Length: 500
Image (cartoon, rainbow, N blue to C red; front, side, top):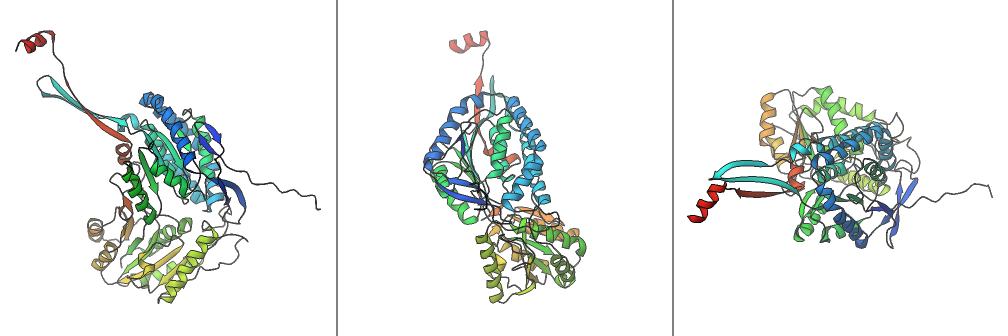
């Protein structure tokens, strides 16, 4: 024997009513570092019984939390914001370690998560209702907002710090209690956040964490104790979540997939456009629902853009996101790596050609899940490559003659999440933003994701529901309106009223 010992990865637990709780009879799944395959922990695939325990804890905590003054709830969120700021470096390292994106990208994600909490602290203003005095003689009417009840969120792997914060702080700020199911592929960052939530003085049971996969999802969708469900994931699963949860009488917002086009006009500033396209298409290894994945080149735009974009793409370094030299980290898993590579192969078989080939990048760590930045040109506008989500560092190039053609291509998509146009023409930009059937539009901006105080407003198959994530829609979603009509009499008026 060589004297070495092997330490078993720890098994994660659910957070229910403030106590870290072992899941009941759960299968375990490895949580791995996609940069090198290292097993970081084991996550339990909890079941419906675990969900119901969390829901019961949230129900028990609801009356006291709802009865906590709105300014006190905001103060607890202020405390959480400060704690997240203080621990931002730890949170970013956790994101990189379990999800794979580069540290600068992870830091940016954590900053956006903090921004969400900060926006939610405005709840004493944003939750205000309205009053109209004198709607009739001695009659006043007012509309007030009250919490919905127990809310749940099902969140994806690609933003383990940020996307849960699209929902959690707004929900609890409005007086609801909460059950979170993060992705089973990278739950460690939310484990850290749960510790900060407790430290911020948010009472036990207000926020609960249930780890797992499809059984937890179905448990949330079916639980009679859950009043509202928020979801982010693929379009197919978003529809499933929306239909099953709404059939069970729940309020639902379900954010689905995307195929985001970046329209490049002949007058685009090439250097800046290339920078924006690279950041949009290859940031987080293309694993973003707001990633630009199709370049729609108008006229001779591709001829002008190609040399710069290809050279800069080929210069990108692929590797472990912890390495400061890395520009593009791994994808989430070997299975994702295989799927993305197979998609590239299928595009080539369908007639596309490679301007940049990112398959099997060199110099990457052993055991990792790597696909390098890839550019496919000569892509058929009607092909799956141009129309369906790849969710990897792959750009497809479609060439069209006119802006009308570009708008027609974008509007023919079943998705409507984000899009961008690169041009120096105000007329072209205005025409595009008015006519394009997409919820979030960038003008000379590669990723048109809105800040926390505007809604994340996808359209078509990219969103099911009528109230979007964060911004003013968050308060609308996490509250119910109650209208009160009141009549009050003076002493003399009461006597006259009964005599009459």
